[in-house]
Length: 235
Ligand SMILES: CC(C)(COP(=O)(O)OP(=O)(O)OC[C@H]1O[C@@H](n2cnc3c(N)ncnc32)[C@H](O)[C@@H]1OP(=O)(O)O)[C@@H](O)C(=O)NCCC(=O)NCCS
Image (tube, protein in one colour):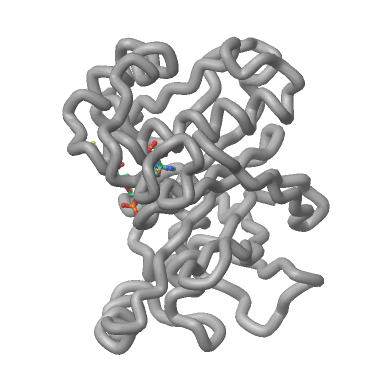
């Protein structure tokens, strides 16, 4: 998968590594690599049979993005845990229905299983994040200027606001919900972000009404023009 760009962050003292790829710029593909047919042979070598069954249900663009996400995660885990990428097995299994979707986890090698992972897809961009032991969440959204007013109204209605950029707010909310692990099974309107109280580059967040009430440190990630992205880590 072409060039991927690693980016090391420290959020509330916790190291988090983010890596992303732009399939439209993929050096392995034709000019618009995101539209290339996914490679089923590569998929078989990368995915467990459980995840390959999911891959086979996806349309070409989603299948290619799914493969890119798993490939990014494998590279990320290999780099952080100092193991060979081919030794890394990733799987997502839904805690609600047991299906092949949900938060991705490291199945092997054993030394890398404490690594916590997250993924986000938007258009041709795929972003992955990892941290040792502290759950992480990453979210990326393509900034579509043509539909900004309707989009911003929809975000405010569903998730309230923090700061002055609704799309950034939404990526913060989704990053927190992914780090939490329940995703949109939690009402996004319950995510609270301490606006205007940033420590360094990080922002404090929590989920209102949760008994344990853990906190999350949030930071913005620069994926280049046209994209807004955030990463969250449970502190
Ligand atoms: C997680 C979620 C917010 C992401 O939605 P999205 O904006 O459409 O998609 P994104 O590209 O930003 O993120 C997708 C990635 O989120 C991750 N993800 C999915 N569910 C997740 C969860 N519960 N917690 C953390 N991460 C999750 C996956 O890695 C997925 O990528 P992959 O399918 O390639 O592995 C949404 O899919 C969700 O809430 N899912 C869970 C809902 C649920 O549990 N339903 C019960 C089903 S039986």
